[in-house]
Image (tube, rainbow over all chains, first blue to last red; front, side, top):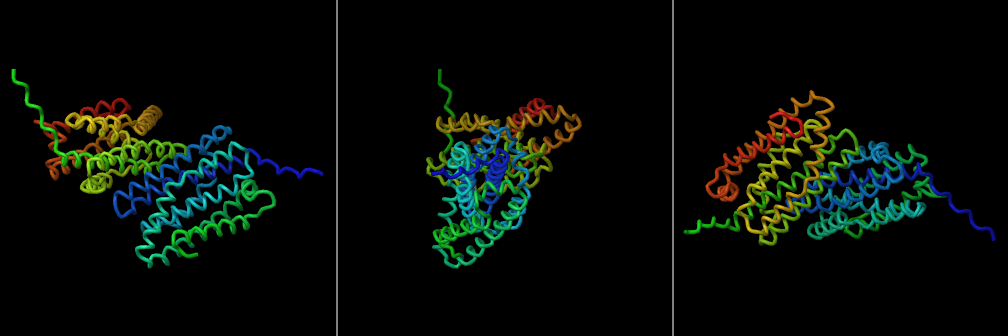
Length: 219
Length: 219
């Protein structure tokens, strides 16, 4: 029997690009939650979302430290992805507290699925890092609870929030395709051996649809 | 010898008002730092200010928990002071990174002086809480270091930042007088037995002037 060829380990450069993307995602998720917390109907919930956001900036620190350990400058590794995140955010500015929560819930969940999908091809240290990052779910839990309660209290919000969630996913797919087209090496490590970006996006979208149901929204 | 009359312990209502003011101050300081971090010249410093801001939201949590222990609702205790903070912030929006840092440094330092001034008349549990809150100085340290470096690198920023610092103090005094006039019971606990608001503000202003010098700014 000939052993199957082991998949080639990703290059250090590709890993630095991936961690740069993840680090910026965590940093900006933190900022966005703190900004959007101002949409809360009272100071208690405003503070609660800010407190939950702290998990994201902690994740940022873990990833930034790993970049430093790999000999990379975290700021430089993040810089190439600024524009993609900026334009996603500019086109998906929530108009109220529930829209903000759907964005938190979806963003966190899709990011987790994405992390899981890309982590399998990585070295142990990077895989462990990603597992630690994934274990943080404070903001998503808070958002899911609030969305479920809102849908139960008033079914008429379901349609509006479901539409909003679809728009977020559509904009997210657009941005992901843009980043993938501009970063071939990164895309290679993300989709894995023999994978395609479309297949990955289809998988992420299916997982997303199941999750929408779990908080009472439609696909 | 007749023992001096012990000063009357502040009423629970007055302590709740004071803790409400402090809690909102910490929550909004956190938010403000995260917003203003976007003025940073690079992603590394932007993240550093956000990370330092986490100390403020932790302080918020400590104070909110104490309010809950006293049987008060933190959100309700904070609500009366929203407008004063909102109008202070609206009139002191920093135009660049250095102005943002001066606001962080000054705000944190004046808040600390204020905490120290009011804590002496409180019960042990409240005094200990305030000591814990005071021990957090990550954001102020980061800001002081950056301001000192900027003044050393380019002396021409001294005048502009000194002027900005004076404006912050002036606006702060205005707001403090407004809050004091509207909350007699709170003012009583803040200025202490036989004290006046003017005397307290003069003391805070003197401490502020010494601190300005320590980061290379003028009074």
